[in-house]
Image 1: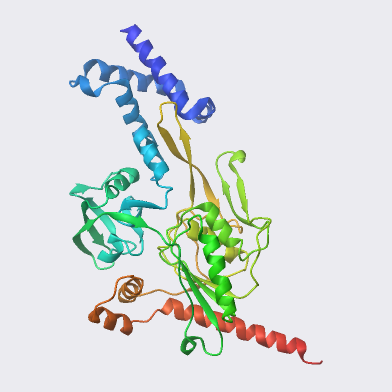
Image 2: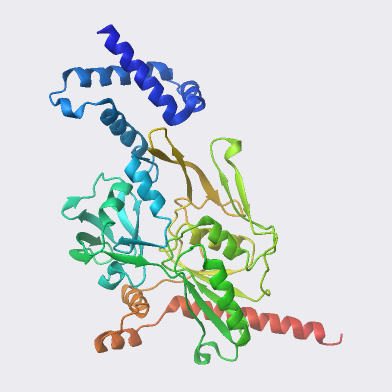
Amino acid sequence: MKRKLLFGFLALFIIFNLAVGWKVLVSTASADSDDAGYENLTVFTRALQLIRQDYVDPNKISYKDLTYSALHGMLSALDPHSQFMEPSDYRGMRDETRSEFGGLGIVVSTKDGVLTVISPTEDSPGFRAGILPGDQILRINGKTTEKMSLQDAIDLLRGEPGQKVTLTIYRPSSKQTRDYTLQRELIKVASVKDAKMLDQTLTGNFKLGYVRITQFNEPTAQELDRKLNELRTQGMQALIIDLRYNPGGLLTSAVDVCGLFLPPKTMVVYTEGRDASQRREYFTDKNAKQHENFPIVLLVNNGSASGAEIVAGALKDLNRAILVGETTFGKGSVQSVIQLPDGSALRLTTAKYYTPGKQVIHEKGVTPNIRASLTSDQERALLLQRRDAPLSSDEQKFVSEQKDPQLDRAVDALKSVMIYNQNEKQSQETPQ
């Protein structure tokens, strides 16, 4: 018995050190006010030994199975974004960096303990079915999402194109629950859309440009730069950037987008963790070419998350843009992926993002300068407008009857800024 216990203790000790490192073990032991880390490890090891000795099903008690199960529980207990990834999960995570994948086209996170839709990807099965930001996913193919890890939920949503998935969704705004049966497709993401000059019946004597960023991919900054140059040739005097329902994407892409509007070597965002060594600052490229300093409004809502919040927070804090809309989602934590010797990995939350003005993004979001909200009908009309597929006559009628108060407020804000700038310029030119 003592030999088994000693072997179990040594095995767990080795696994523990491989997983989180000697430094973490020592710091955890010193930080525990109630007991030393080694005594807690003894309890854990004793439980492991008893399971191996007495559990009824011997097929479930391999050291690998028990260790993986323990690590799954350990990481999921920390926060919704930390997780243990088995080798197959880790390989799948690396595949996510590709530009296309099989899925339903809905970006999800855990909010207040509930699996929640951040935003549907445009022209995807979820988008066409009418799934909205804020919808809560109660079941996936009949399996409850209560206590389900975020990664397990994503694994169920993604898969081979052509397969059907049934989601049971509760919509808090209407307090209704219904099932959606969707078919997975190969999701292709276009990041910059609808670059255009707004109609002058809306903008008056001013020439206002509009562009929408659906998410931040590798080519987003280059695409946006090209669209801005095209708008400038059309006489654009000011710009509205629509980040509503933008779930984020690559941090480097968000920083590069900021580089189009901020001077080179400007800090856009920084991270802070438990250790001073985890502070990192992200700057615009020293060789980036900044566009002319025209007025900008960013449209944001509670579907704007992660990279969209980094851009919004930076341009707001650095007084480069006015934010109009609603407080953003509040997904601003850093997950470090640490590969383990057997091909598995830890995705561990190690830091949080802060705006240049030292405002934390995570669980707080970025607040707009000018608050404006949409009714449920206005929100539905906006999403219908963004569908690539033709609208039915009823849908067209419905869309034409709805307004976009957030866009209207953005236009009003830009017109006010431009009128003020004109008056300032005239007063400086008038002889005193």
